[in-house]
Image (cartoon, rainbow, N blue to C red):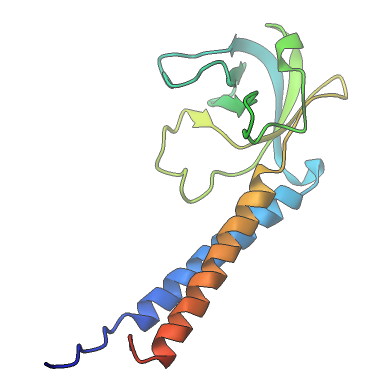
Length: 169
């Protein structure tokens, strides 16, 4: 009986761990930014829908879609109401009406979102109308950042243990 050869995957796997940890740091930093640190667009609402079935047929009323005049994007805002959803900290979006002038603060798309539907922006952080908050993001980015950072660290530790045991090289 011959002993199995250790697999040569350590360096590539370690690079993957660094990328995962980096993504976690990116998300947690984005989740900690203040409102004035985000890009913003101000305009009148010329489209407001609670379902927008053509683009996202899986919505069950947990999304709001807002388009501002002269903006190329439709903003997709998740307002999860179910137990376990990453709901916003505060939202009164259903009180907005067509023609209301609002300011939407949003982040850049994450690397995972860049190749998705270019018409939608799912990174809305805050929405204000006349200086009053109508939407304040929740802790989804912060918790996601902690999750990815933790997974990356655990995977790196597992790789180091496997290397020490000479299971991988």
